[in-house]
Length: 410
Image (cartoon, rainbow, N blue to C red; front, side, top):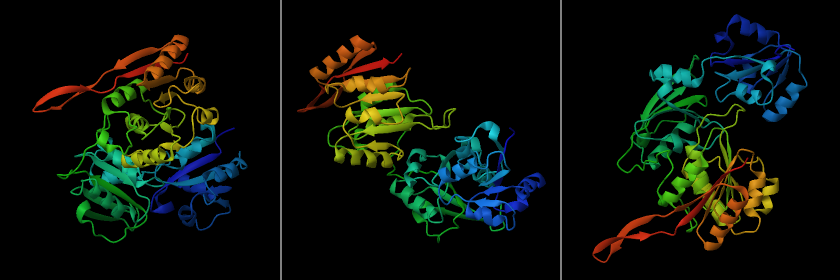
């Protein structure tokens, strides 16, 4: 069967900006799929209309019932860049679909500002927390962000100012490619423009103020950036732990006994941002039985730019049997001595997956040694000392040694 779904990218100028062949596909559609704004662009049609009002999954279920008929999906700009095409592809086979792209907001914004798109950080706040900006904000970095609505520019300006990036230049590009296109320029710390049009894109030239705290994407953030109650994998050990966990595109991490969530957070920050061949971005699940620590982990994740961290407030190993998705990588940072915990993690670990576990007690070290004897792997002892005042002089004071297990499941 040839492709029966055609996904057509549309600009703000509507059908007028489309090629005649794309117009013909819309005119002959039997099922016309799209949001209210796109549906209004097609004033007259003999097709049955389907919107996203009941959610993407419900719409795709209805589309499935039209298999083999002429289904046209209208989307904004490039449907394969944070768009409907990318979402549909996770449900339908490549042979089912044809995509006709239109220049998207990123391309339009780069053209308007004469920015090299290859050198720009691209993020979306549409349908996502504003805190995703935390990962993109770096000194002298250019960011293009898809807005949620007309309030987003003012919210982003306040957000940048609170982060110490108040001098950053902000350009709002409204309704690009349409008759109502407009550009608004300003500085984050002095932003006083009224509410913008809902269809807008943000372009930010990040400039650090004197009080800005720069957060590099590599593992090893300072300990004081994490809200914690003392249950925190310290900076040097955390750096080695994330390196041992080896973040990769699209993989799933379980952080068992997550505490403040520091390892899962640093793993997500270090994981490559692009999706794997199955269309999945890197995901992390933090399992923490203590409600207060679970809440801290959620706050830390938002503050450090990875609000997508999933927090599961349950006790391990009991919760692990039904936890989904199964992990490609597991970190065990708490409860090492708990009977059956390491074995339960190993059972759920995907073949070829990696498990890392840290212990500081003799009992925990004994469990790791026994587990290594049964399943193979490596043990490493991590010793860290810091220079501290001793009276009028300085001496190195040792932190507690950490024994680290690293193993690959056959």
